[in-house]
Length: 327
Image 1: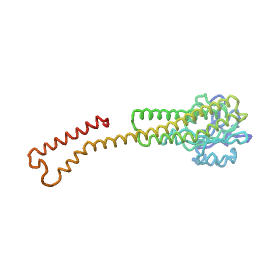
Image 2: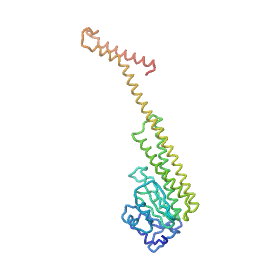
Image 3: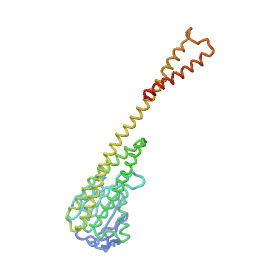
Image 4: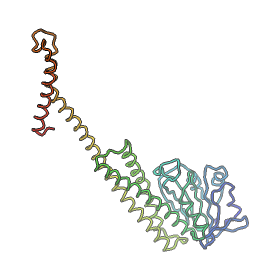
């Protein structure tokens, strides 16, 4: 792929199709253009669009081994070196309104010194940030800086979401200290989000570390250092995720303890109530038999005196339990 002509990059339903002008901005791709490493081309495609899918399957600009990967099913983050380029799969926090953030979005890209082809199905907001920088004239100047910028934006979103999870854990901890039980399923969802993020961000950290260690002519030492810093930053986020998983396990144990204590307290209260009214129940049962000779059966004040005696008896039992510190 020594020469890339602009007319080979014309895709009618492409989301983004531009050249990096080498100064932090972007320019349109003209049919007569010849793409070179000083002004590489960036194509961002939705592989569910028919024209984009047809171009991915038929263009000679892509190695055969990456065609299916760019339009394939979602998978864990990975990186494969293909000559002077990379086939990379990354995951992004899902900021789309119809999904939860932990339902991560897959972004796939093939990159070398002249061409960047990135694909997605659901929107990746990190791509919009890089595009905005290009439109403002302070974006990446080449393929190496583009890769660093997109990885940096993805990691920023991941770090923000991890911080949100951290704040939720603190809220749950404070609520349990106040003996307030969280809503049903809230702790389970939080643990699931932590585990899902850990599952996908661990290999993504390894992808960044691999990119930082590769020696490619279109990535200079400063870009490799920045990529290593991004890897380290994501690694610190993984440490927070591990701590979050451990803290939610403690929360689950504490929640079970609080609920068990609450149940025991209710059972204890009911037992004490039964003890208070047990003598009264015995007496009412005894005096309720339909046999002759019941004391006070013919006395007009018998029922009133009997009720008074029951009340005194209940208060006496309650006083006894109070002195024994059972109440």
